Amino acid sequence: MSDKRIIVAIDGPGGAGKSTLAKRVAKRLGFLYINTGAMYRAVALWALRLNVDMSDMHRLEQLAKEADIELDPETGDIRLNGEDVTQAIRDGKVSAAASKVSAVAGVRRALLRIQRGMAQETSVVMEGRDIGSVVFPKAQVKIYLDAHPEERARRRALEHQEQGDAVHRDDVAAELNRRDQQDRARAEAPLMQAPDAQLVDTTGLSIDEVEEVILSLVRSRISNGKEAIR
Ligand code: DC
Image (cartoon, rainbow, N blue to C red; front, side, top):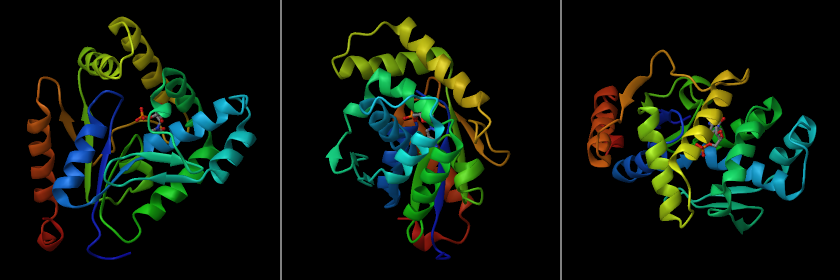
């Protein structure tokens, strides 16, 4: 592990703004952007397509081990076994399946290996649920991004609308709530704020404002790594 390598871990529930912010912050810092949720979604998509029973833990683990997952570190686009699945993994059915798939210990082990490998030689901004707690417990910067549930549901509903999906905000809120409960309650690497993570509440803040908050946290946490921060 290179001494200059910097890991910025961003965790939090759905709709808190992780993907948007992680991508922007990575660009500003010149780091790679890694969306780990997209990886769980890709495995879930494959399992759905193959009609795998979501309680078949061995088969799910096998898929996670065999999946050829490529992430574009600039755009966040994702390829599964050579196919661009960036849009396909955003489907509501995939979201629900991803939450189930991500509770399987064997799946997490397989993806953990890939996630750690991606940051072996380079600085990254990695976002997910367990980056600061499990994937990189020694990350130099740990941020827990959160927002009021109503605001998170509003943002998610807006995302769906922008993609042309007609959704009702109440349905989005219920689905988000169900997934958050599942992600928080599971035994393996549950969603949690690591004790040394900085809570950033994005309720009522613009994307630009949150970006500045995160960048200033990164700068203040990395005392003598100026050479790595552009
Ligand atoms: O961030 P997202 O909504 O795309 O994540 C999809 C699912 O994957 C979500 O239910 C939580 C799960 N996940 C996880 O368990 N661990 C991660 N590091 C990232 C996502």
